[in-house]
Image (tube, rainbow, N blue to C red; front, side):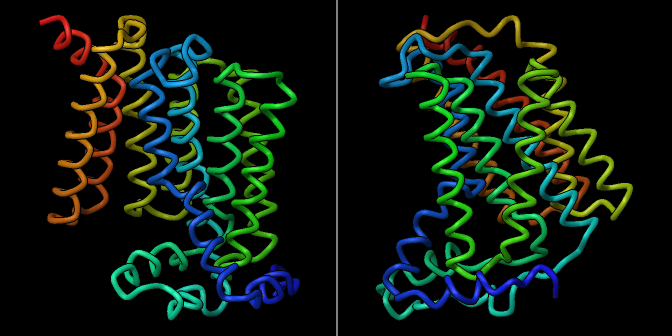
Length: 296
């Protein structure tokens, strides 16, 4: 297999404690972490601790849109190519080093399922962390790029150490995400256009390989984000301290409720796409409710 150049086998043979540490580090590129980070940055905006006036609501919305693009690109290309992961990717290595109470969580962190090309973690790492380097104006541009690049490389390395991807999966994910990031911030320039790009990519993926649940989610996120930002983007104010807190409290409640319902119902692709669209629209519109609630 041309994707197997021996790097995965070499790195996955590292000492067990190293593998366990990388299972934790790989979460920096996982969807749940990237979603939490980008959503909280958007909801708190200029009230984000240690960021202050270094971020605007619109630039934070761009990070959310870049996450949408990462999802759409990864799930669509995985469906088109349909290439498997390395043998053993579904088995958590060195699980015996983790306390029994955390074995389930560790297994989820240290394994991979579904198709493997390109790496979704690598794609997310470049688009979200690169987006953060573009959006949060702290330090020089070179310093921000160095931090984002370092985190992305660490996430990519973690996927190889865990044995859930081949090197080619990581490199292609980096390349495609880098191109998408450049196009988004230099040519598209606004959240609704980047959400629109995500919707177009996911729609192309659905045509090429069928409407799977993952592709439906990517399509819903893109469409919901594009429509919502067109409708409310200019009306969403910069956050106040109380308003940001109220927004985040409402948002976390909605997200947890939606996640619980999704796990209980296990919807099909169409329902998943609709839920993703509505959820993304609510995420972007949430500051309107939070700021209004804070004034009462």
